[in-house]
Amino acid sequence: MSEKSLTSRGNWSSRMAFILAAAGSAVGLGNIWKFPYMTGENGGGAFVIVYLACIAVIGIPIMMAEVFVGRNGQRNPVASMRLVAERNLSNPAWRLSAIIGVLAAFVILSFYSVIGGWSASYVVYSGMGDFAGQDADAVGAIFSALLASPGVLLFWHTVFMGLVILVVSRGLKGGLERAAKILMPTLFVLLLLVVGYATTTGHFAQALDFLFTPDFSKLTWNAVLQALGQAFFTMSLGMAIMMAYGSYLGKDVSIGRAAVGVGIMDTLVALLAGLAIFPFVFANGLEAGQGPGLIFVTLPLAFGQMPMGVLFATVFFVLLLFAAWTSGISLLEPVTEWVEEKMAITRTGAAILAGGACWLLGGASILSLNVWSDVYLLGMFERFETTGILDLLDFFTANVMLPLSGLLTALFVGWCVAKESLRADMAMSNGMFTLWLSLLRYVTPIAVVAVFVYNLM
Image (cartoon, rainbow, N blue to C red):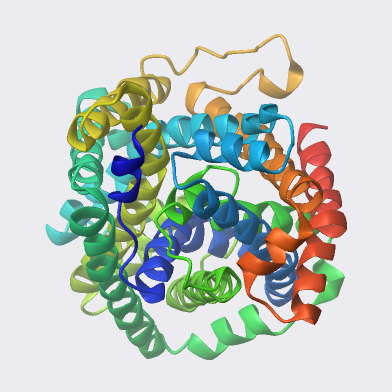
């Protein structure tokens, strides 16, 4: 790519624009879907405390390292890693971290788009009043019928992927930044509306107690490691996203402050999601630890029994769709950057090519839910004997690729980049810089390795 074209790639218009976009990446189904049910499964407040500690100790340090690489490379994530390595007289093979990250983003988007399609379909179902007055069997049947229909799933998968490609194809100013400035404030407004409605259930105090009163007797090592993994996943680490977004970040923006801002916003949404969901769960005598079915079965059942349930169910699933959309945009961006620069084609062409390939791979995840439901890859291993394609892709990206990419990035930036270069770029006080570098060099790698080994074993 020519030097002229590199300088014309543009920068975020402000630190807030970057924070909104990065938070849009971090705020996704992991916050509104996964965090509440993991909290429910692991005893509430004690899990929340561990999760917040993991965000501070693991999430923010690695995010800062990824943004540093992107800003200093000013290219796609793979090229940025190679350039930063060469400038610091290190082996360019460190770019393997970014290669794994870009590949992980590609694979995750392929099945994330399928789940995003579920969210889009539920906007229609809730808007048409399909959940009103229904019992548990009827609500469960709606979800089962959706999963059993490859044609319907393909339609919604196509709609969702089309929305993602539309934004990414418009580039930085007209696409990524504009979407972040519209979707993120809207997402917060919708979330606050649902939280406000949740206060009318009579069980809001119970939800507050559940989320914020720690019971450490219910906290297991399994829960601690789950909190570590969730903090890693929810901050969009190991997917080369923050490298891609960092490549548009101006030198006048403090990486540390921006990363802390993203962490705060991401955590705030996760906690608000819990306050939006658990009052309905408790009001209807339902279980807090319902797993993924909490969103697509339990909540529609709860909304269907409540006054104004049709309206607020629709608002909730629009919220869920927006959260999935902002994350989908960020997942496609590093892949599009790589295709655009590697193949020297237009941004629109690169977005269509990258998104189209994700869409094709997503077809395998769709079929694994119905037509190929009895096809189990790696069935010779006991762990995977009942694991279909979608679950297998989810497992390997979340438990192998993301931790490996994040670990390599932490080791590279922590040990191979010149300390003076880091200090100058981070623009932090000596004390904060020493704390960050110590976490990145020692604490973060140990924690990531712990999650990595635990999940594999």
